[in-house]
Image 1: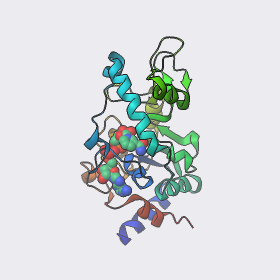
Image 2: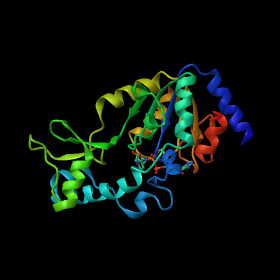
Image 3: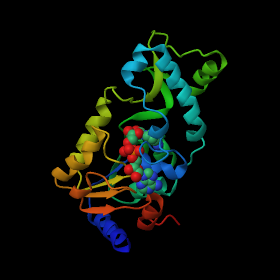
Length: 248
Ligand code: NAD
């Protein structure tokens, strides 16, 4: 492990265009469960498909019920050492972009420069109309739902959903374009806390590798992409990154 930390420091020091890519694993130390670890979200609830949300009032009701439930944890969560180390790297070194699958906003809360955070799966801290993209704050929606089960509908008639990308929903074009450009033009790509199975997001490590970047994977459990990486660290993210970037 000591050698691996030294190797990672060395790779970061010698790279001139680094991209960091994160998944749900970076937020478990903040108390937000990931999808696939034991006790993760998938062991309790299967995700609601986008098509079902659009077609069924029951699915929309269940979506908002779950949202109110998960916010009890998500709204308490604070950035942990992993988020802080990445934010520090983005300010100090040549880390240009942070591509995240996460929807919790903890990278930005931890100090990562907003303009260089690319959110592939949206953001769960607000909602949006699926027709006209009008933004909605969550508190009034949750209050009305809690009071009498009212489902949010936009003035244009569109359904309102958290501003996240559900399974079956089209990926957002601009974040995908920016992530693709970042992956194709970096010389170091560091994937942190992702099982690397949710596509198309999980395609970015190999896009970077195939374009000539060194690939590092930091994750508690092995991933199918470990075999392609130049460095793999199987460990806890916070303690690992805090050794790479001392947080004083
Ligand atoms: P995943 O649940 O499929 O994989 C998470 C990986 O992180 C696992 O392989 C696990 O071994 C590892 N991990 C968990 N805690 C760790 C820790 N402390 N240290 C080291 N490794 C750790 O997550 P994914 O690949 O991001 O895909 C899941 C999808 O679910 C994503 O699309 C994401 O948008 C969404 N999601 C987001 C959040 C969030 O925003 N915090 C939470 C759950 C799910």
